[in-house]
Image 1 (cartoon, rainbow, N blue to C red):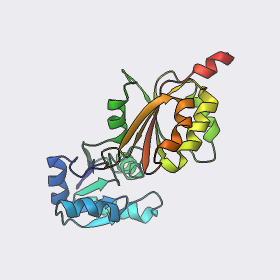
Image 2: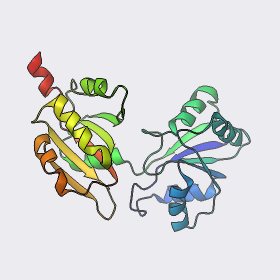
Image 3: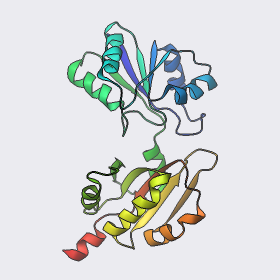
Image 4: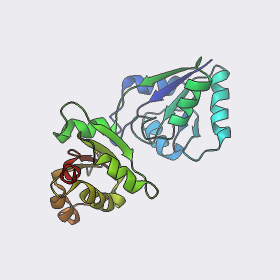
Length: 232
């Protein structure tokens, strides 16, 4: 049996990769990518010639079967996402879950490194010991139910969001958490135009037009429960 290496890759700056990750990417037989075009930039930068195959959320079941067969044949496979640590709010979790349940004799090993949630939490200044990671929120069905659930929490909440949907998400947070909740925003982390700002949500929304809304955003809600408590 081969080994599946779950490899964290840079969230922006290509220098944010470990020496171990580079070595393993060179040594494995195959790299399973969320998007081969995105991963190719990283591989070309480090002159890594390992073959790649696409693996993304809407892949047919046959793609999982293909990767499992490679592992059965004793080949080592690296799993990478477009950026950051695979398996966290990431379609690669389907393959990992399948192996854990159906083929436990295959070793699944993490090669740790960059993570957007850890990077944002480390500079937010609002997280002392614990937080709730919500990942990407529902776009339509179940969205308001999710916000109602989150508003009852009393720990900081970390959310992944597209900059294009940021205004809508902030509006929903304001509706469920109230005007005084503290917000921290990290945009395009480690990239050329990275940006960080914080404030009460009413202030953040008012100031939104002064910021370039592009790329990926990590949003941290200071704490939940403030508005909910008023109605109890």
